[in-house]
Length: 592
Image 1 (tube, rainbow, N blue to C red):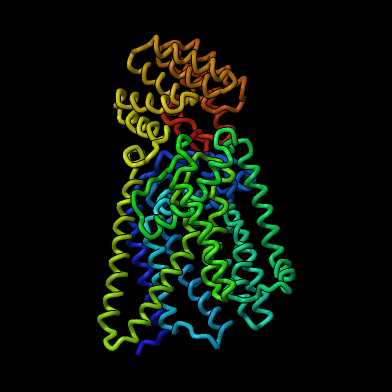
Image 2 (cartoon, one colour):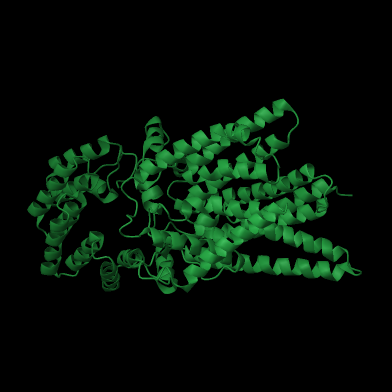
């Protein structure tokens, strides 16, 4: 007869297999033109694993982020698979499957801790506790809110951070429950190490020290007024690491934060209340999930929906505190876990114009799903006390299976949204309540690659109408006008772009490309030289100069800039190497 322990192992294996099957279609997705290229495909710093690249990963604030371990994971993928998107997606899926198993373990340990600390109180049976953990982990694993974290290659940091975050939490629980002092020390030290790895994956892990204190409150029952100082001292290594990560993250986002003049405090506060309720609703009834929920500054942030959300948050908080006073700590623990882990993403410090994002729910909603699992286990036990328990148990199992299938089906539909750049941005345009300019820009770029210039131009103009100050759109419009033969309009826009951004080397290079397209090579050369005067290491200017000299058949000067390009570890675009007759390129990566 199969032991209960073996049965649990087989059940977890089936759980992981189901989650893998739900998410495996993402392996067929392409990279998308939303950070995937700048973070991974065209990032010259991560194409090799070396001391130089390691230093860059540890010290860079590129793209406004600091996550060295995530950079390394992308670098390792590129070293193993190259720029083939399939394996990159597969690695993220496998990490998510591991996280599901870890979450199942956390759910079991939390319930075991409660039983150990409350031996005289009535609790769920071992089988029911297993059911609660299994239901919570299954719903977490197949939920459509997970798609953005798992399927978006550039969001690898989410699943990687959760891997170490949950592992550290498991070791802390084992440390708190262990009797042997040697084992406790090992659990503690490895827990600190794993927390450091979580921070190196994504600084959002800074919430763990507060979560560990919350675990001390419930279900460990270690937190008392007399022990608070010692418990705080116990968390000192965690707190120091969190402070260091917060400093690095603040430095990475220095100068990029959305100013209060654009999004005032009251908008941020009311949006935070709305997001708290919004994520709970989407956890239970996921619908119309959109990759980007853009902040709409024209909304009335003291309107009914925002005020009701604020009142709802206040009411739930009050109810949980009241229940805690009445000796029922579960509700307060789950609610404050949700608020603590969601805290860094509530928008008080805004680096982007997002009002919300599905990826922010990866860790925070685990407590809510555990609560659903506990409710299912309670109903399972209640069904067992009926005169005819089998129909009730079959009905409960069928309902849970139906919910799982519904979530899984919607997850696969959401994975298809991320198939490629065009499907992603078209979906945003068709489904977002407030369509951001970047969606039109993304569709425009996809159409331009297909040679559909008129359709691409219309999308670029739509993006420019939404954000007139963004000169990227003007540069794209000028480039298409030049290709369509509308020379005067293109040149007028080139001049306008340079006048708007005279100190931006990209403005000069993009204008130079258009001049070169029109056969005005002398002016194109001058534009490239102006860009190099602003930034002597600006690689696109080297590419432009090589193209200009090749068009003039000046191979000596073209090779001169080729040497400068590869001496810094960059490859040159393939078409230029072919024209130069370079058969064994010495660079390491494609240029930015």
